[in-house]
Length: 577
Image (cartoon, rainbow, N blue to C red):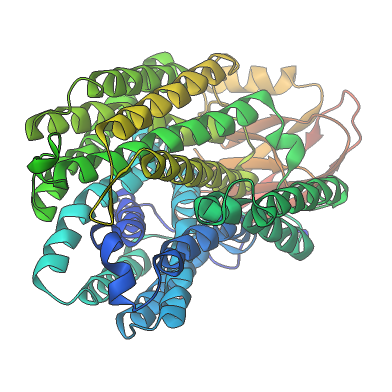
């Protein structure tokens, strides 16, 4: 597969694209937090043992972890919009399956299908990178990345209200309705990206990664039930290590791998992904601790005695504050870079958890903690995709952000397992019921603080912000021509329309034989462009501009110090039926 364009023209990115993609992210978050208000009632609702009921949550986590990098890669290859709609459609089917049953196995099946929606986050970020101008990209990616918290914050009180006053299956009908709305809006508003990666889908790589992830996440989520030192838990961890090691060796040898491990090993990508795990841990701890503290009866001596709905409303600012930090992040990042905003976000999270250790005696204090942590997590989450996008080629955006989203999911999984174990080990048994203690809550906050400290250390190791290539052309024609003459090794020429007239501000992308972006620029007012090449070999020059169809032109450079002259003639815009 050598083509890097599509048979349809690039659509125009309207002002509604960002809100629609962010709404899709919020729908995914709603799906994730849907059952939080009824977790403790699941064994009775499904007529099963508590250890079996947890599979309703575990199945979603596992399928989401598997689907995220796979859907990202499929989006790079076959169209991010197409895969986004597919992810949401599978989620809708899963929600309807769950809405129509109280059988444990069918419920697990439905929740597994819902987990596939997790791929929507990296796909949305990839679409934004491909379509939006540079000045809008930062705030748009911040909003998309923080949508997972926004949706969670909004869903918690809404789901609690439904669970308190209606049949719990209504939750799934609501999720299905939101999914259908997100699909309809995406079809109406979001154009398909013209960017394509070269190569084919790495099926053995997908199977290997999926197997390794399931073997790794299964004992993390079920270790407290099976016993952390049990043969099953230790055996699965060992099997995961072997499978992921063999998968890594295989990926290094594959021509078009599911995950480019060489790119992933770059410091900018590696340390961002490791920091993402810590941010995921810190995000989930507050979601586990505060609702329980708020709902425990006052007779315990430390519980705050709030209803399910009030507890949800007091924690909701966690997600809402994340949404409001998106424009703040854009301004800070534009001035100081995403590395600085990540560090600032982690510092605010540390302050939030530190303050939380002494603010657990009144409901209003939970509100303060939620706002502080929401601001910090919002800044940190918003920084992560910007760091990834700035470090990988455009053709790998979906897969790279999918892997980054997976790292956050691993963080929340580890957080869920560890905090669950801490709260269980420190609980008091009252009348046969395990009641979490204030000591357990405080230890949980200390664990979150330690995770933030590790994340901060990792963020400090990130390379100095590397300003991505400026995708803008000079407004001075003479200056552009001087640059063209100065290029000794690369391609130069003009971008022309179907009638032979010059096309200004056309985006020209240089793609190497591995499907990676090797350079990009915008044509000048006279249509002139210049691109350097890293070495000799076969390349594809992809060009697109508003009002014209896309073009992909194959070309070869000898690698010597002579420019290759190549004019790019864009076809006229066609109308898709």
